[in-house]
Length: 307
Image 1 (cartoon, rainbow, N blue to C red):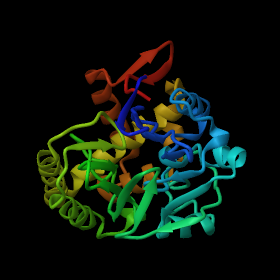
Image 2 (spheres, helix red, strand yellow; image 1 turned 135 degrees about the horizontal axis):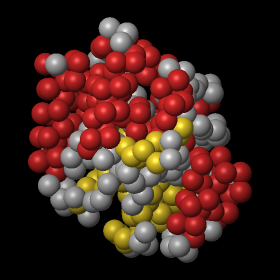
Image 3 (cartoon, rainbow, N blue to C red; image 1 turned 180 degrees about the horizontal axis):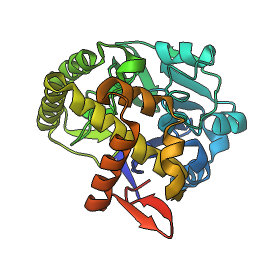
């Protein structure tokens, strides 16, 4: 897993679907943007060290939002380094109040740990990463505290989960509210006017065609608005895969029972699928097996998605 220098002493490290990508500034005052999932913090620390930054030397963590795949290493690194942690003021509010519902952790039965947030960011703020100044743009919809970071001179956009090259991040209407799809549209509108040379997303590799990615996201949102059941199905798929990524290998005869303990799974089936838990599970598992996204191995289920 190689690091890519995207600006002077600022490195991009691509992870997978479970762990958010990292950005590491390795100058005199090291900065880390997003810290991955809590169970993989040892690998996160190794990756940071690979570009010359020991976790104890980190002076600032910037979180693009407070979901578990972006903040999992916060407590460990902050405990060792005493660093500041900056995130949008909404996320800081969640952190200060120890709100594990608005952060999705309890809703999706995710493992995470609270930390001491010290800097509240707002729309239009400038945050300094070494010699590089990034504009903070608030992008709610996927996460109410979601932000992207824009570097105008280099025309670089750190888009987090507000924009991927293809596909779209999970949208939980139950947590984010009934306006969530419209908030995604409004957030995408903010990105359209930016001059962008390269986009560095929260998951997946860098890409260059900002407008095409926005158009694909807008098309998916329009599909959800026209067919809410599609949003329900896609949400359930993401919950199933994410759960496997966090806990695989998972005994096949216990996977459905475990999903039934996840509020997000049962509520989504209730809302979109009339409470047909077993039928929805069976249909989605069959689809995943047919497509090779999930595999059966000695009575266990595993996913082929990169963690």
